[in-house]
Length: 306
Image (cartoon, rainbow, N blue to C red; front, side, top):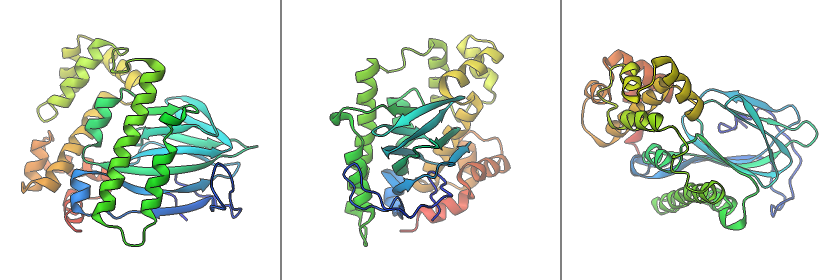
């Protein structure tokens, strides 16, 4: 079974009995097919399941077009954040934006078993920017009120329904909003106010400018000039704090804006390219295909089919 969220390539046949699971197979996945309304307006789950890693499991990946939450049911391993491998144990959770470099590896003597939910949605980029200043939130053995596991279990249960309906999409969206709020509450409880005050004011100003003027920025140097930093120092500092370059951040914002217009407007694809800040249709097409793994036209067509 191909596990797209974790890109699992190993299969174990031993049933799992731990942490409240009753003989749940450690390699099982459910795939959702939400309709146009859900994809264009709600948060929605794409994949979910349980994965038991082999001792030699390792994944390092630059990009996947979604976000993911995992919970370590048993065992341990490591999560790649920036250039550092951070150990995760039973009871830990990780919620992350997969559009930026990430990775996992299992402990050779006690490989992890995880539950996972891969999710996306039109409001997600704005919510992530509003709630978090980091691309990854690691919840280390959170107290029950901050645990993500009950919401994850509920989402997985909904995705097992043989005939999903729009009402289930609403419920899953509510649960995904709840996951983000629980992660935010955990961060605030652990670190105090995490609104971004710990990040240099120059970078916060530059980030807001890229959010607000994504359709008019012609060059990253324009952004670095506004920040008051040299071009080199701005790029290096931005990547240090936000785990991506300013150019990558701006590109993903533009692609997200274009996705919204493709689903919610009647503009031509070429007009959407210019409205999203691309200087030509060919540049837009190439960038969109690289990020979304399909053309803008195919994305619009698939998004408007229930």
